[in-house]
Structures are given as C-alpha cells and as structure tokens.
Image 1 (cartoon, rainbow, N blue to C red):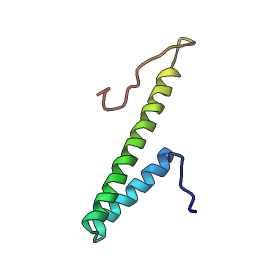
Image 2 (image 1 turned 180 degrees about the vertical axis):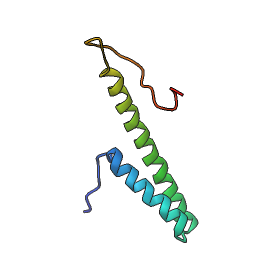
Image 3 (image 1 turned 90 degrees about the vertical axis):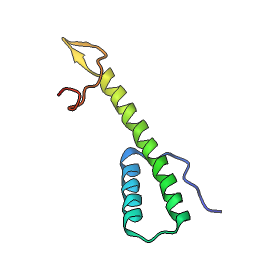
Image 4 (image 1 turned 180 degrees about the horizontal axis):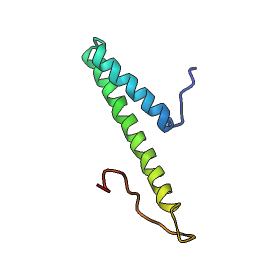
Amino acid sequence: MPVKKSSTPDFESAMKELEQIVESMENDKLTLDDSLQKFERGVELSRICQQNLKKAEQKVEQLVKKHGELVIEPFKDEQESR
C-alpha cells in the first residue's frame, strides 16, 4: 500500500512545487484534465504559502521590542511605508 504524505509542506517546498507547476503549465502541452489538476494543486499550494506568511507576520508582530520592553506592533512592509 502506498504511503501518503500527511504533513503540509513547508513554505519553501510549497513555493518550489508551485514554481514547477507554473513552468509545466506554461511549457508543456497538457490535457484539459491535467491542467485543471495542476491548477487545483497550485491553488492549494498558494493557500499554504499564504498561511505560512501570515504565521510569520504574526511572529514578527509579537517579537518587536521597543525601549527594552516587548510590545506588539503591526508588521510594516516596504510598500506600506512608501
């Protein structure tokens, strides 16, 4: 009996697989069914990446120190500060 992966891939693994899917969809001649399967997997991987980024953002918010005290501050990216 084949062993199924029960764990969710980490961010890097999900991104790598997502990049491979995009490349395959751009360069390979796929059937409609194959394209739909790859698209569905891509959506799943995209959600995994978004969840991982949100978790990382929450950790950053919790770990900001100000004047020697730990305070929660919203995460600011470069685009927001412009």
